[in-house]
Length: 97
Length: 476
Image (tube, rainbow over all chains, first blue to last red):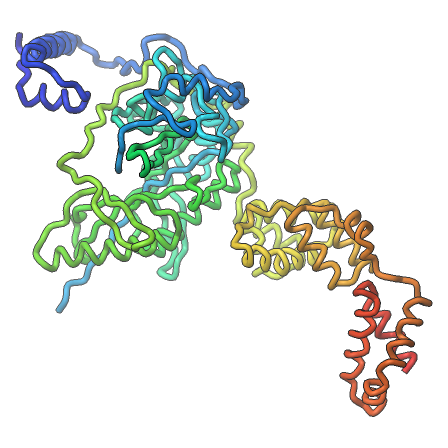
């Protein structure tokens, strides 16, 4: 494996993804990420001169909706997904900006 | 000699678009619904839900781009901006990083310092977040996702502004353009237009920019002006004391009129943008672009020129009327009905502005219809009501958009045109006020005013003052 992921990197990625990894999981993740980067390096060997960057895998564009209201009040259904609720709102741990 | 500093300012302006539905789902964008009543699996980020782009969002974004001299990115797409915050249920915001819909534009502004062009770096489409309310009682936060997924455009300027005055002129120009397009009502106090101010200072003549800070939560032109002045001073004080400005986001506290650091660069977010695989690219063909270009409205400058040619009203009035698209529409539609530009302008410039000011309202909040204003003008013209009664009727019309003809009829406010009845009343007034009559006959012209007043009072205001004057003079 050519790419080696450092402990700092896996720590940082864990923070960004809000994941708490055990030491074994960290080692496994380092290995997985390393081989992913190896694969990207392999792809980078291809000569892509003159090829437009691909922005989507399907040859489809312009899928639109018209600006018409189609949804009614489904707050009851929506709130069933809430971990907790009060006054028709989702209750979450105190969050400050 | 003390060092001279220059303020360098760039703006990020978020504008909520006036679509009926959200950007990626068919939920209503109506303001003020009960919490979470305008939500669905898409805008609450439920797994497996798929976003579908609202075409009108693209139309509005392109229209704003064209009106601000941008180059339109005919092949554009959406990216995910990843961060965790409870107001963002997907844990990413759908935005545009790599191929924003508009680039390289500019708008021209004018201040006491002269005319200048402010560059627009880019305009991109994105979705708004939900609203967080802090519940002191439960010591928790509550989230309402009605606003989640409401379409926004973010207009990013170049760091071309040098003073609060230029910033306000730029914002007013943007607001004017967007309101004329009907793409948003752009209300700072209601959050449909929000400005983040990026500011740095440098010594006059310096080539390099200083370290900048970003200020958020500016809800009025006054707050923006105060925040800019405060931040300029704060940064200069730091530099003068030999310290450095830290790149950070600061939040403006409008009540206390100062800003405080929210988060510094050290723990700044790494958003890990990547193309959104759920949304296919948008291709704006030449035909589509031409279609939007053709349907651009007449903007303020053109409108002012046309008014000068078409209507015989003062330039100052033209400025005020065209300052608001809604007011200009109201003016034109009323004139189209009654063909009396001067009188329409007088009602707008006089009573309308007075009541707007008195009630702290914006011209956009005017609710009376052109039809009703035209009817009121006709009532005055035909002497069905006198000007005092007209003003009273106008006030009710301003508040409730009543039909003035019906209202006058129902309340019996019609001017009494029964000459006999009027003459009888005046005779009584003359009898009852011998002193004033005497004064008038002795050359005290003003005394007639009192007698007119007494007559109007006796007639409960429903007399034509000109007729009262005429008959009085005749009888005296």
